[in-house]
Length: 202
Image 1 (cartoon, rainbow, N blue to C red):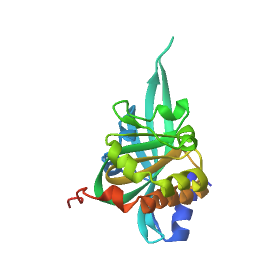
Image 2 (image 1 turned 30 degrees about the horizontal axis):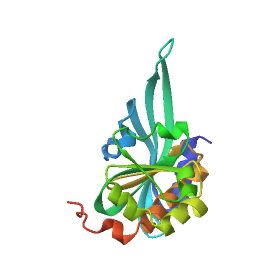
Image 3 (image 1 turned 180 degrees about the vertical axis):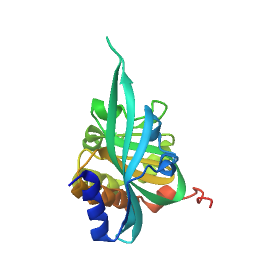
Image 4 (image 1 turned 30 degrees about the vertical axis):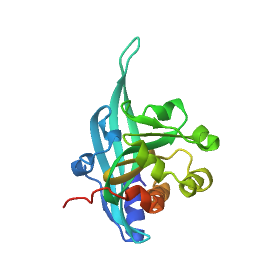
C-alpha cells in the first residue's frame, strides 16, 4: 500500500476529504516556512474537522542547494497541519534549541527570551512582536509545551490568521497527532494575546 493509499484510507475512515493533487492555494498562506528553497509543492491534502475544529493536513516539499566543494541539491519533506485563528496575529515561530531547528527561523525575527530556564533550554521562539509572544506564553501554555507536547520534534508557526504545526515527513498513522497538536496549541492561546488584534477580512 502506498503512502497516498494509506492517507486516503485514513481520511475515509474519519469522514475527511482527501486529494493527492498539488494545492497551490496552501503555499499562498503567509508562512515563512514556505519561503525557503525552490520547487515548492503541496500534495496529499486531508481536509476535515477534528474535535469540532476545521483542520487541513498535507505533505510539503521543497528543494534547496547546499554550498560546499560541490553544489548539492537536497529535497526536504515535511508534514504540516493548519488551523484558522480568530484574529490577525504577528509572526511567531516555535522550534527547539538545536542547530537543525534554528535553520527554519527567519533571521529578521527577534528571539523572545524566557524567564523560565527549563523552557528556554528546550524551546526557541522568534517573533516580530515580543509583546504578543509574552502574552501568548503564559504559565499554562509553557507547561503544555514542557509536559504535554505530543512529539518533541514538532515546530509551530503563526502568521496572520493561521497557525501551522510542522515536522519532518510522518507516516500516515501519525497525521492525526499532528492535526491534534495544531488544534491544541490554537485552543490554548490565552485570550489576552488576541486583545486588540484585528479580525480577518473576508
